[in-house]
Image 1 (cartoon, rainbow, N blue to C red):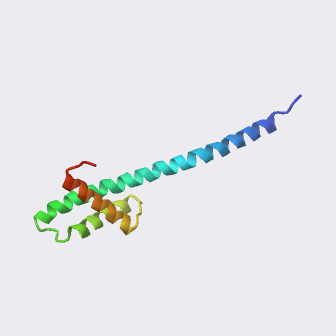
Image 2 (cartoon, rainbow, N blue to C red; image 1 turned 30 degrees about the vertical axis):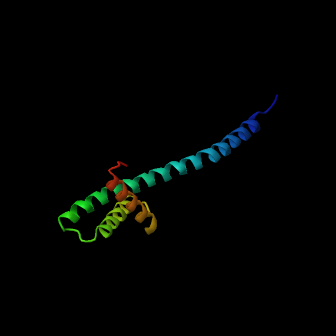
Image 3 (cartoon, helix red, strand yellow; image 1 turned 45 degrees about the vertical axis):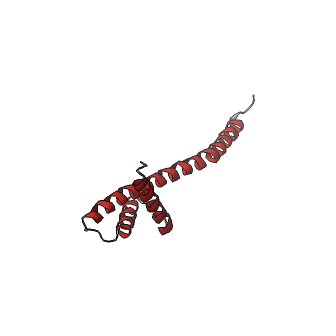
Length: 103
């Protein structure tokens, strides 16, 4: 009689390796996309808020306000981006607002 236990263990090991090789990069890409979308949404909200508060003179430096709000939002969600990336997202949100383009 043939003992297939070793064959089954080998097949399970192979499947686990293949699944890991495919699933980990895919999951990392999805999580990265979600983080980026969160950054863009936070930047858009902060830019619109800064613009409104700037008109009422509650906020003097709209960029500083938007940067602080985006950073606070990301921090609350456990997301970290460098200052340059946050600034670029804010500038892109300003451009979309001025162009009248949604998201």
